[in-house]
Length: 467
Image (cartoon, rainbow, N blue to C red; front, side, top):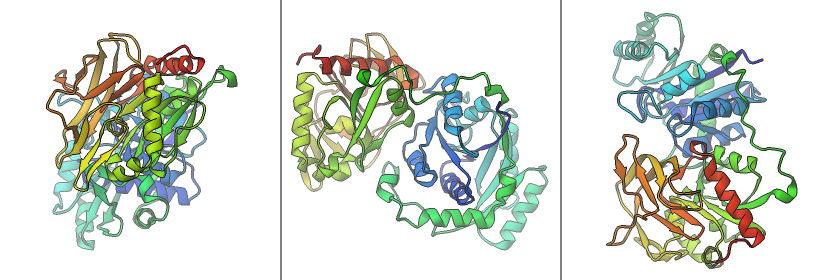
């Protein structure tokens, strides 16, 4: 029976305060101790979970209270901590920032309350002394149901600065406190969609070691492990298993999943759900010239950075022709964001035009500013790969690209709303058994989406779907 378990959320006062560096540093330092760390990320981000997995040698799961029901959040957390010694959850944006200005829906704070885990609040203490205490006091009083039990004053400039901050925070009561000095060596390179991905960084980077060194030398890890969550309220929850035994080998269906530097944005939970429903996932690399794996009944093209590997994708002519041919034959294809772009005519950039799959005759261009950002609720208006008409599921959209066409490139098959209920025009493409859009769908928002996808894949392999 679960009771007290070392677990905490590394939250921030705002974006850019250094919570990702602190979270990765803590994970690295705890791993060095021989502890098995279960990593998680609040919100819809893909890049941070990849970095977590790089450090912890195990998948990191997103916990998002706008896209996922609370029961699923608890189940995923239970599954993620199984066999582990400590759970480290990295927050997103500021502690109370989410899908609404007047509620905690979609926020890090909401996850803290759903799981009843303590919060380690990271504060950017540059150019502040006693004001750090005022800021922390405000966060502590804003919602008393959020248990802020630790403070990390980040980017401290000197010994005198550290002394001032520690004295100021000392008046707020007994809780875990640490200060972290500014460290230019412990930084992660970034670009238009965020930090560099784990696929690009690999294990040869020195920044992970630097982050671990930083935390190990300046944080009391024994005291940190004293931040424990009372998980007794989760004892009645059914653990979310990544696989089910009811599918024997003959019932399984192979799904080809693009996974490389260009296509690496997938919710781990989505992959787990597919496996749990009887999918056998076969990963392949479009940028390395690999084709669709033999025996596949469907294709999953996730998002990522295809624009950075436009030439490599163009050179893989066999794959591009293969995808187009299989789509015409009726093979189910689910494509999200970068995968959606890859199905188009190609990409225009400074080096010219790079032809891609040309399943639909629309090219894409990259812009300097993001073109869309936010949660999306989708309601289908017709039967698609993902299920019947009038079903609703949720996801997230974040992109710098746009389809270059004078005519609107939204399809009549769906209606999309943002988190505030406003209608949003989302470029998409629906054709036979292809469902492609900029939206990263979270299967927990409507499990029938994954079930419908796999059902179509089985039908295709049996020959029940014709081109």
